[in-house]
Image 1 (cartoon, rainbow, N blue to C red):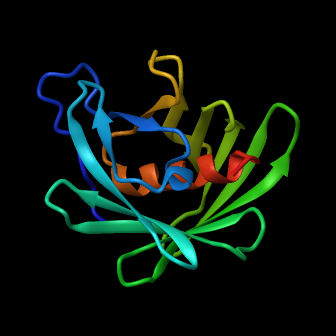
Image 2 (tube, rainbow, N blue to C red; image 1 turned 90 degrees about the horizontal axis):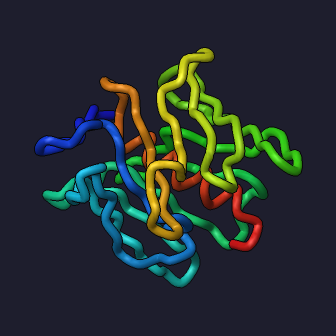
Length: 175
């Protein structure tokens, strides 16, 4: 897994990204922007016969990660894969309550992660060993159906954005 830094061109927070809700449900191509509104990554939505696939790419078109929604997927579980189909993480819904949800993220070659907070309303944190490595919030954006992802410097940005997309998909019962 590579580490990608947001090339901010003067933005106040080079590790803040703006994402659209329900990327997997949309299935169209879209961009993940940095806080300055510049394109940082490309999400290639592929609608295949059996499943929806999101391929996370850098702006040069190199595939980094992908999420495939299988029509008969194991309930409340999604896998994040490398372009060669190796699984790098499995995101699972661990606890459901009316206000807060908890998710576990089993990382294949590293310490596991967890997500706690109001995932459906995009107000939560992703932690490794109780240390926050990403914070997801709607409080910084005014555009409907968007939210920000603030990532701790040195973390694999694209990996955490793929996890955020999987969490968004699992948290929305209408998908």
